Image 1 (cartoon, rainbow, N blue to C red):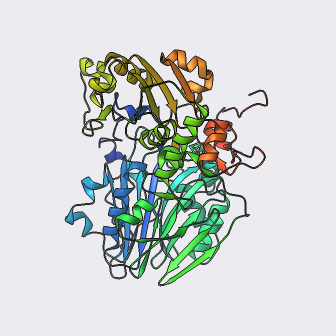
Image 2: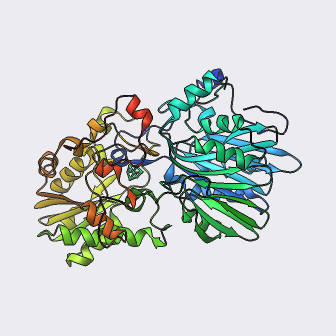
Image 3: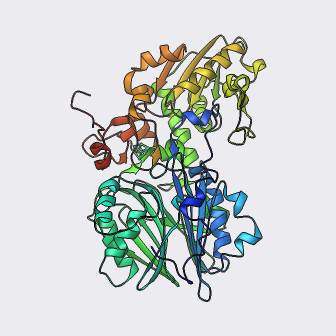
Length: 510
Ligand code: SF4
C-alpha cells in the first residue's frame, strides 16, 4: 500500500504513535451482551449521489450493531482524489461532525464498522480499522470486508516471504496485497484474482475512482444487498442500512457474485466455482436487525416463527412468557401466540448502561446484570415464569437473570432458547469464545439446566430452526441450506488456519 497526494489523507498516526491511544471499547464486565456471540463487521457503499459519505455515515449508523469498536469511510472526488477518515468508537461520535464530513467529498464512498475477530483483537490499532486502501498502477482502490478469511495466516506468510509489507494485523489486508501481485489490467479483475486465493467468509464493499464493487464469497455466508438511491446505487450488509437513506432494495447480492457498478450500469460476474449457498443461519436468530429483510423475509417475522416452532417443540406449564430484552423479544412474541400464554414485558433493560460505564468498583461489579436489566416484581411474584432468550453461550448471564427473577418472587423459572445449543466456535466473522468456554460444548441439555439452576431448559432443535427460516422439511443433513457450524460442528469451509493452530474438527463419534 502506498500513499501519495491523491491517496487517502490517512489521519492515522504511525504505529509507534498510536500505541498510547485508546484501544477497543472494552466489553463491560456486567453487560449481558458480553455473553453473546458478536457479529464482527458491517459494510456500506454509495455511488452516484452527491455527498456520498454522508449517506455512508447514515448507513453505518444503521449497521452499528454489527461492530462498535471503530469505523471508517473512504470517499473519492474527481478533483480531490481519495479521502479517508478512520476512528475508534461509534459512528455517531465522529461521523456526525461537519468538520469531519467536509473532508470526505465526492459522489462515491464506502465505509465499514468493526468489531474484530482477527487482527489486533483486544489491542486495536487505528491502522487495523477499515476500509483499507491500495494504490495500484491503474489507480487506487479501497475495500471494506465483513467476514473472516480462514486461510489468512498461510496467505500472510506467503505474501511476506514474497516481499509484501503489511501495515495492519487484519486478515482483510491480504486481499490488497494479493491484488497488488495480480497481473490483471483493471481493479475488478485484480480483485477476482485475489479473492480466488481467499478461503472463508467475505462480503465486500469496494471502490475505485469510478466504480462501486460488491462481492460475496461462494457460499454467501455473510449478507450483502444492493439498493437504489435516487440516480445512484448503494450496497449494505443489511437492508436497514438502505432504509435509513431512503434507498429501495433491489436485491441481495448472490453467493459467489461480484457486482461492478458504474454510472447507471450494474454488471454482474460469477468469478468463483458455483456452489450452493450456505448463508449464516445465526443472522436470522440474532445478528441482523429485526427490521432487516433476509431472503425476502422480515427478520422479525422469522424470529417470531422461531418462537412458534419452539412452543410446539417445547411446551411448558407456566403463567407468563417473558422475553429477555431486546433480542429475545420476537421469539417470545411467537412463543406466547402459539402457546396461548400471556406475553409479559417483565424485564426492563436500561439502555444507558454499557460500555460507557468503564470503571466499576468491586461493589458495583457484584451487582452484575442488575445494572442493565431489572425485573418487575409486581408482574412475576408468585408466577411460573418462562424466559425466552436467543442463545446461551457461556451461561453466565442466564444464571444471573434466573437469580434476579427468583429474587423478585417468581415461583418457577423456565428457559426456552431460540437457537440450538452453541457448541462450536464460528470462524466466519463472528466473535466466539474458544470451544472449552461454550457451555454446550461440554454439557448436555439436562446438565445445562442443572448448571443454570432452572426448572426446565429447552433449546429449539436444528430442524425446528430450519423450519422456522422456511425449510419445511427441516435440515437436509446431506445438503444443508445454511451454515450452522456453531450448532452442528459441520463447517462448510475448512478453517485451515485454526486447524494449523490445533483446533480439532468434529469427529464421527461426536
Ligand atoms: S458458524 Fe454459526 S455464527 Fe458462524 S457463520 Fe456459521 S451459523 Fe453463522
